[in-house]
Image (tube, rainbow, N blue to C red; front, top):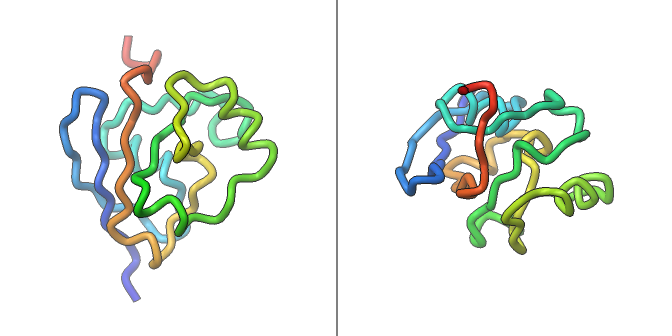
Amino acid sequence: MSETIGLRLRTPKGDIVEARGAIGDTLLRAAQAAGLPLEGTCEGQMACSTCHVVVDPEWFDRLEAASEEEEDMLDLAAGVRRTSRLSCQIVLDETLDGLSVDVPTESHDARRF
């Protein structure tokens, strides 16, 4: 069993970042470590929508369903699509090796200014 999985992350500019994420960690932390502009203001407490990503449709149904609380937070996110999720709520496991997501063009990380 591998301790990490591969991730395919598309930046708001359309660049592809191939990254690794630790099993049991969240997509938010893995994407931040790879340099993507996901702010995660609430530090994964599901109290904001600054870690919103759009999951590639082929991967979306493989994820556990979003909770009602996550759906409520997604209502506040810019650029929401049918396959939108909060990256802080996606816990990485072996079944997600190769997971592909887009960071919406509306995303920005205020920590970088």
